[in-house]
Image 1: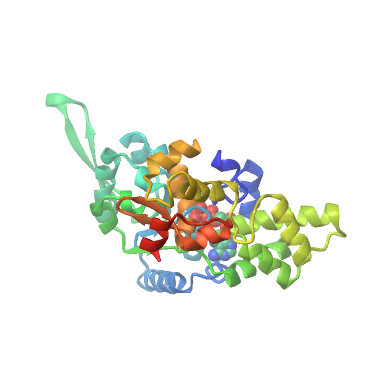
Image 2: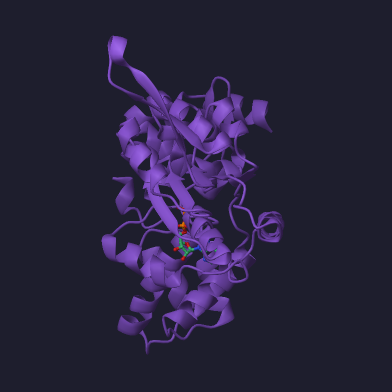
Length: 341
Ligand code: ADP
């Protein structure tokens, strides 16, 4: 269900995936915002180039659509190396990973998306590959079992995860750089919208770009998606030029409010306030009441609501804040209001 949300951080349609490819920055210079991360990466890349070595393994953690895959591509581009892409759930058997690892060349970048979903067996298998650039492969079974030690070329693993908490400590420790990508500031998203608009030959002024940016939940992928909705709306309802009013109308028509919340966000807040008296309520109960997957709520809905302080995660469950209630024109039941604020 969430895959169809206009404010989802995940790609929604296959052609959107293709378009994202066009809009994806190729160099660190073109990568907007995230200054601290860019500085750290630049040092890592420069050091590797100076020593003529592969880049240290990098782990990127953050909600979908914030630019983790983009960074993996940028690292490969900046190092002039090849990127091989896979994901945690795609690596089912050690043989799958063995095939990929032994085909890697010196300096290649192996990108593993959703790395928190690697099975424990694959995780064990990947440790020596990351640390000593070798894998121990067991052939035959029982009394005939033999361990073959296969050396690998020095590659770089770039891991991406939306759930750092689900990563085992030994795996996390094997990365040279571990970075949490946070939501983007509206001004950075505005720059991204202007950049994308120019790549898409769409005339847009700074103010309209800001209107889109402010409703993009701090997420570049959503900013690009909303830009296209505004472009279509301006073409059909106006003369093709976006204005801030037209942009706001286009997004309202899509159910995206001035804070970037959509119906699912609002429903979640409403349910906490109405059904659960402001909370606390466990995520399982929330998911059941909303008929949504827990993963969808945890990965796609909650992070932004937490970020803007509309909900709080406590040991006893989720609570709605006074700001959230105000945003929806609701009252927070007494107890929750007093304990929280
Ligand atoms: P993730 O892997 O975190 O889900 P992606 O790397 O696929 O996110 O990013 C989604 C899209 O957002 C990219 O195709 C790109 O167009 C855009 N994007 C992400 N980060 C940036 C950035 N820092 N500057 C400009 N565009 C970005």
